[in-house]
Image (tube, rainbow, N blue to C red; front, side, top):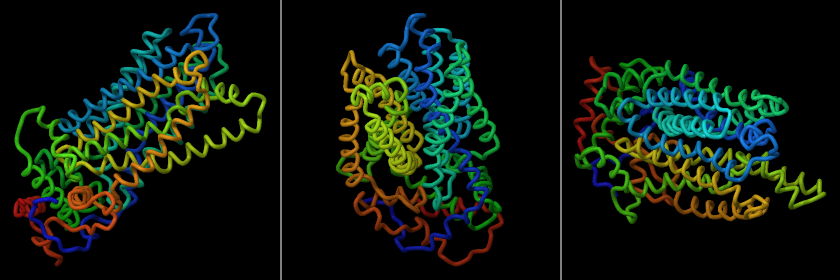
Length: 482
C-alpha cells in the first residue's frame, strides 16, 4: 500500500479529461501506423526467403532452398537489432522526447533499408537488416509510449490496439500482396521491390509525427509546464485556459512530483536500477512492474505467432505436406485453424500486451520500462527466429507441424499467467493506473474505484478560469507534495 497522503473520495471522472474528439482519434490512430514497420517486415521476409532468384543470390546458382542457418540468420538478425534499438530508445525518449526519438528511429530505419537494397549477397543484407532493426526497435518501443501518453483514457486501449491492427492487417497483408506480385520475377526486383516499399511506411510515419505535438508528460518530466499545457491543449482540442486542461495537467504534475519525492537522486545507472527497485512480495514495486512488462512480451512471443509470420512460406507448408501426405482435407483444416489462431492472437493477446506495457509504469521510469518490455519482445523474437529452423527442418529436429503442440502448451501457460497476474486497467488515466497498482492486486484490480490525487484541494465546484493556467496547475500540484 502506498504511503502517499491523498484524498480518497470518489470524484466525477469526467472532470479529469476533455471530451474525446475526432481530432484526438485521428492523431492517436495515425501514431499507431508504426505497427506497419513490424508487420511488413515479418511478412515480406517470409515470402522473399522462398523466391528462387533470392535463394540463388544467397546460396548459389544451383540452390533450390535456403539452408537452416541462412534462414535463421536472415530472420533473427533484425530482431537482434530491434532488441538493442528498443533499449537505447528509452534513454533518447527521456532526453530528447518521445516524438523526436521516433523520428530519429525512422531515419535509422531508412539507412538500413538502403543497405539491404544495395546487397547482392548475405553479408550486406544482414548488416542492412541489423541497422533497420535498430530503427524498428526504437519505433516499436517509443510509439507505444507516445500513444499511451497522448491518448484519452476512454479510448487508450482501442487506440494502442490499433498498433496490432497495423501489424497484422496493414503490414502482413500488404507484404503478402507485394511478395505475391513479385515472386515470379527472374531478377533482383523480385526481392528488392518488397524491401524498397518499406521506405514508404517510414516516410509516412515521420511526416505525420512531424506535425503532431510532443507528449505533455514528457514536458512535465522536464519541468516545462507551459509547453506541456500547450501540447495537452492541442491533443484534447480545448483552449489552454480551459479547466479541463488545467485539471488534467495538475493531476499529471502531482503524480510525477509524488513519485519523484519517493525516490533518491543518483547518476545515470540509478535511473535504470529504479526499474528493479522494490521486492517481489510488494505488488506495487517497480521490480514487479518491470517483470510484468517483460514477461507479457515474452509470452506474446511464446504463443508461436511469429513462427507462422516468419516461416509460413518456407517451412510451414512443407511441414504440413510431410505430416499429412496426400490429404487435401487435412491441409484445409490446418490452414483454417491457423487463420483462426492468427485472428485470436491479433484481437486478444497481441494488442493487450502492447496496451499494458504502456500503462503499468510510473512516469519516472516509463520510458525505460516500456523499452525493457519491448526489448524482451524482440529478444524472444530473435531466439525463436533463430532456433525454429532447427526445430522443424527435416535434417534437424524434424518436428514439422508438430511444433504447434509446443506453442499450444505455451498458450495454456499464458492463460494461467493472465488469470492470476495481469491487472485490469480499463477506463483509467495513466496516473490512476499507477495508484491502482499500489493499492490492489491483479485479482482485485477490476473493483478499484478511481479518485483524483488532489480532489481535496481543488474541490468539485466549478472554479473561475485563472489568469495564468500554468501558474494555477503548478500551484495545485505544489500544494500537494505528498
